Image (cartoon, rainbow, N blue to C red; front, side, top):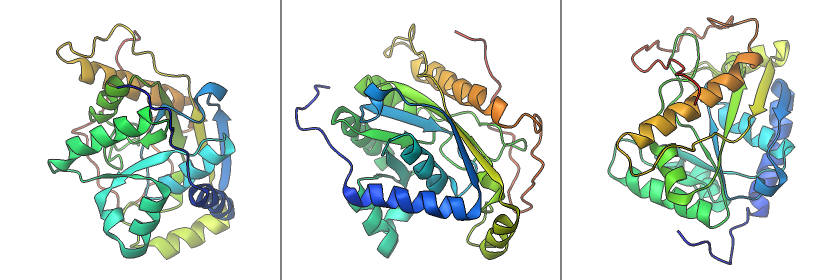
Length: 258
């Protein structure tokens, strides 16, 4: 893809929404952000790849990205875009719709790659869903993030996060009021870490299985960043959401380092 001269820039509305997210997150929890995004990448083109713990993640990551001077366009489920007010706000902010389980997913990947080429930072959840691993470790990823990276050639920065599962339950809005009241009382620590760009060298995009190998490296990098964020919870989280299903079918085991 050729880089256009007229690069996309985040609208003022989205930057204001990030400020609101920072205030809201601060009212419910304590946010700690570590690592950084290199200055040359903060305005794009860039792909941020984060693990997915809770419905609260978009607010946490919006606040953390604001702390690092980044305004990403979020790849989000199509259901949000169909909501009357939320959908309009998502479109106005420039976020990207993903209709999972439909043929339109491929169009979403093309749209995301084009957005990156146009100078955007996009935020992707490579797992493709809120993780259901019993230990809340990153699950085996979908290949969409790797395919976007191959298509546009942009670097992928892993973003590890921990703690958002203590603010909103998996089945929110069910149980949301009780969970929010508990968070205000206990003020859990939410940790977000921006890692170094993932090394995808040595993987030829056209080679068989390339997207799977690249996806494994991205998930490995997120996992590596998550380890120091939960030093006292290396196996299972202390806080257990009784409404979260348990699914080990997509559990990921870190492979050898490249």
